[in-house]
Image 1: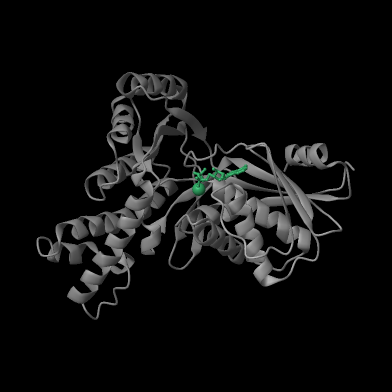
Image 2 (image 1 turned 90 degrees about the horizontal axis):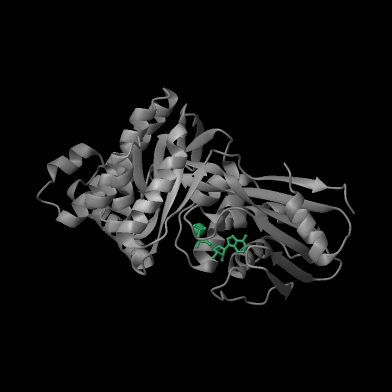
Length: 392
Ligand code: ADP
Ligand code: MG
């Protein structure tokens, strides 16, 4: 690990001092398994080769200072936190984590910290989870806390869903912590267990193309889909008593066929997406194990059609990017993330990627007069830390 940038920033901002700790955690992309996590289903994310680094150094008093290069701001406060409230700012993520830790044990002293990263903020690659996990790993080391990986992941997820107020599942934080280089994580969000699956599609590249569209509907639309899924599960549990249906995870395709036309149409479509998307995750794991890029691509594209037609979370700009990709040589493409804007994932031949990126941006600009941003992502490793004794 090469945590020099955050360490250098720390020395630059707050001077030299005793031993420091540097922690790093990556962003993520979910290959497939969209809107399945809050239905206790399967997802298949991978950590990417972009990450956030946090360097921390203890102080003797109770002051906390945190500088972040991405926003070029320093947060200052004093421990213990007294009934903190979210401010709608970047510091909320950190305060949420500090709050979570302080419920475990009071802080004996403060610290100085500096943050550096190359996960683009707000671009659907989960800079927020990478920040949370890197910060939490740094604090665990700084204070010598005994917390296992899953507890740390849950603490970060609670900071975002509870304190920051962004109703996210656990996938992002889980992947930022447990990610493995060269692998995707086949994660069962009910059991909270994963298996690493090699993500090595020879000659292929994974490119994220950001539509740059953020609809105001994203938050409310996401919340509405969650409610619809819960309602669909309740409807099916009444219709099939004794089948132990708690969430859409417990539903299968045969049940849905039996109630086609009987179940309210919207709920039926939502349920069908989730049930089939879970099956697509299993099929993708299979295809990855066989190194079958064509099949992985096909599954991505079918997932998109389902998000568009059954789950109804796509928008014209996103459909344009996916359709353009499929017409110009992509093996597969889909909307990733909650929907109503956001980003698309494209599986393309590695040798074509530069031309592909240049042309899709041009076509998108010509059609919508919006600038798309593109990043190639590779499966990187999960959270790490090191003690930096070298440069005082
Ligand atoms: P995403 O997680 O997809 O990047 P979010 O909106 O969930 O998008 O999270 C982005 C927010 O997380 C930023 O607006 C900022 O508040 C915070 N954030 C992420 N990384 C950093 C960083 N390095 N420094 C400061 N704030 C950050
Ligand atoms: Mg986020």
